[in-house]
Length: 252
Length: 245
Image (tube, rainbow over all chains, first blue to last red; front, side):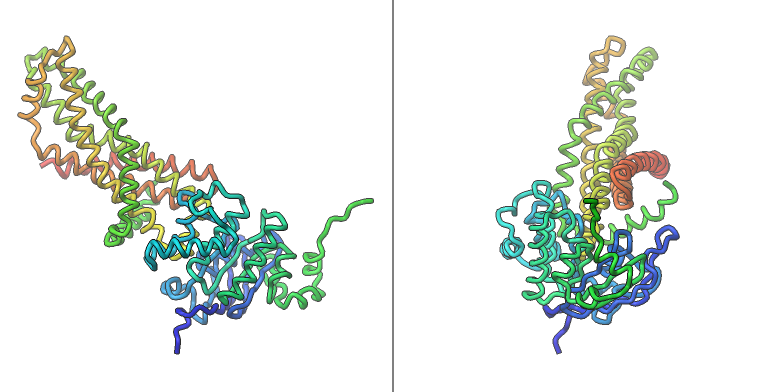
């Protein structure tokens, strides 16, 4: 039987009774989620509802106060999980290393883990940057890039590890509508190409309903609803409807 | 500061445990080494020249008045080699390089670059702390050696040129050779090696602990420099006591 950790297929994620408090304020109040392998799962919710905190727990950056997160049935708390499964997070800010060039950023995982020769890494870097629609930026510094380009470089960096789970934190925030569409298309393309499991945290309704296989709406640290985009749209929960239909009302 | 001593010791221990990986980080070690040397060499020379000069100026007339002109070189030589060069250079490097280390790592922490490293399964201690600690451990003792030589030269220049001292170069260095032994220089260099470990560990620790925005980075830089200097002075006494015999 093949080892799922070494395969290219996405992993499943289970969140069980997750709780987290900061300075006595409970941010996550018992989250339960089942995310299937290779699906695009979008977590939506208003600002401050706990979306990004949940994401950080899923990738193991923050330890939970209670509950657990399982990757393919194995607890993320185990130290060997990080080296067993290839997980990647695309940060809201991009979080590119500002002292490295774009090429060095994208190839960082491969360079530091000595997985390929420098020549191979160069080729992979060029390929990943091309996959996100960027050319001739390899030698540029992150400070020379626009916000949208930084996000795409961050996606290319995440792809360099050929991840089995990729998490996106507000991938379209601060982007113009055209760049947001490009990012959405890339998320869909990656699922097709490398069968990665994607978890997208966003309050961009267009992106969520455009890419999601399933959507969860979170509010004040609790999951309000989980379902397909159609099921979420048809939900009669007043909070979900208010969130989905929020719009300006301008006096004529 | 003292509530963080445990964390600082733990960081130092974890970095020591990562020493077998040092060869893999050799390029970063070299970059840091160059950064420390390039940024500090001129300042070290200027500072140590004038320290030697002022020690000669303070002690020279008093000794010459008591017909002890042959002791000027020895007093300047031993005070610079055993105490002033290691401590003053460590304080200079804490301010010049320790602050830069805390600021760089602190901004990486604030802007989530360290989180990004962790998501790529890259240990920040191996990637950031280890190269800085090794580079500092080599660079500071070398700078202190330079400082000792330049400090002696500064003392010799003032001893010869000042009308109240008038001790020729040859007499200055002859007196210095009579009192200063190679082990005195080795003591000073060893002390600076210990100070280097303190500066790198404290500065990297403050950087890694940074929270908040630019104000948090500023706070970390200040704490890194102040804590390093306090620990340098405390350890200076302990090391001097241990190395006394």
